[in-house]
Length: 217
Ligand code: SIN
Ligand code: FE2
Image (tube, rainbow, N blue to C red; front, side):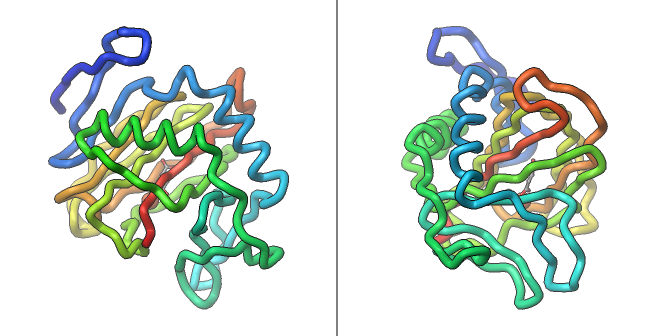
């Protein structure tokens, strides 16, 4: 793991950790944005509530999800896909708050991906016992743009592997405000999170939230 430094908005030096070619963790990059990000999550999920989706194989995902932006990611018995409407009410997904987009664009740029233009933001809510197994983010048509993943609340262990499911994985503890960005050669690499342990976070209570920004089309 290599370390580099960037200046945040206040001129403070912050750490950038390289996980793999094209993949970095920006430690604490979103920490100061926590309160408005939580307010945005509450606003979005007021109209597109958290729900536990079904995998194509018929399993219920342990993380609850919602989306905002022009496109949302959904899974059900028919498969994984992006669509412009929420299947719960057939209405367009809530707009992506401008501040969400701004944070994602700044993080992508700090990670070496200028000009990021996300059109989808998936919001995951993990409660104790929830996890996400190793998977690829490969339902996007535009693989030239990175994934920007923002962690809020309770800590969780992120796993980052390689191009094949059986490749070795590294385990990366993620804390409130950490942002992981992956793209380029590692854009399709396997990743996931281990089971969330119980805890209490001043901003998010017994949960961890994760925002992933993507350019889907
Ligand atoms: C994901 O890969 O969709 C979520 C990863 C995370 O929760 O950090
Ligand atoms: Fe993912």
